[in-house]
Image (tube, rainbow, N blue to C red):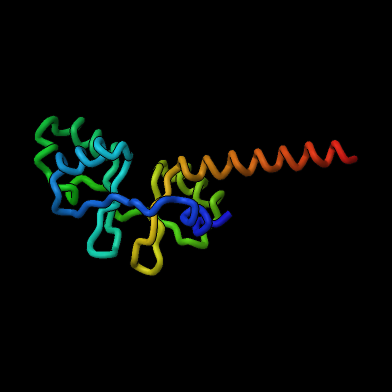
Length: 142
C-alpha cells in the first residue's frame, strides 16, 4: 500500500508550528492535541520536526530555561520525509532505521501530509487480517 492511500483514509487535520514559535507554546499544542510531533513550516515547506523527544532532550539539557527557546533552536532538522508514492512497508523500515515516529509527506518542496508509526501499524494489522481471512477461506474451500 502506498502512502497516498494512507493519506486518503485520514482526516485532513495536521497541526504545525514555525521556527519562531516558543517551545512552551509548541509543547502546549502537543499536549492539547495529544499528538507526538509538529512539522515545522516555512510557508508550505517543512523545515524540521518538533517532537516530544526534542522537548525532552532540550529540557534534560537546559531545565526549565528550555521553554524560553524557539522551536527552530531545538527542532530536528532537516526532516526525514517520504513521498506519496513511497510504499508503507518502506516508510515503516525508514522509521525504524532512523528512529522516528512521524514522517512528513512531501511533493517537491511542499508538505502534503503527515504519517505516524500508528498509521503504518494499522496498515500492517489490516493486511495481516486480510491475509488470514484469505487463508481461512482457501483452506475451507480446498
